[in-house]
Picture: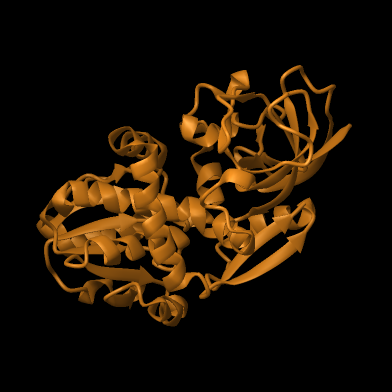
Length: 362
């Protein structure tokens, strides 16, 4: 059979094209998934930007020099040589920007399985887990779009808040969130509002997004990037979702020694990352920016609390987040992989309305 994929040049992310690849016979013990839907968010842009450094290009092989950007979404079993999964069953998990994916299920349970395909094993196991929707407590048939759009980003925000709270927020009285309109920043702000209400939440965003960010009700104060010099001085931590070297330098220079911790998470401002990449501190005053790698923190969190208690904590915060902002984003659905390619390129250029959540149905 022929599988459609979107191939992106690793050294030129704006060079993305559709490709048709012949898929061989399904291997014994494997399952063939038809991709039904996935979201395209700033999270996927980060996967591409740091792809080689963190192994994101390795999940779904592509021709030399190219990669397939990972997505979160839903798929259906269309062929099975695994006795534990039947044709027609639906799953949620890590998928390629493509029409189909072959997986080799292992550790199969009523709630899910791991893909044991050899080339995926060196990467974090978090990305190899698939939920079986018939027995998935997080699944809501009426909220599938919200789960794809917000879910992975929200979990990163949840883990950042848990990490900060575990460190007593490094003695800070306030947290500054760049790219405050991004869904990961909103997730962090929501969980901090629920679990760390004493820590003031300050959102930084572009002037055009101030009204939207204020409308979420997640931040104590919202300011545009051109007002960094007027931000209130207090013991602070900054969580940088923008990946904009110049912007982060302005925050460091404004707060200097009152900045207690500098956390790097995303790269929504692709064009402004700077030549040194996301972890270049260039002699900034205050603490050295430290990269937050969510999969490692997720493994640590669930090892400490166990899947049942950890899942309960996560679910409570997730429902609180959905209640607060689940309806603030208008869901926009597009058909076909060409639409996925176009949306990806649009996001690379930073031209995305934060009030929209985009879902692709290949």
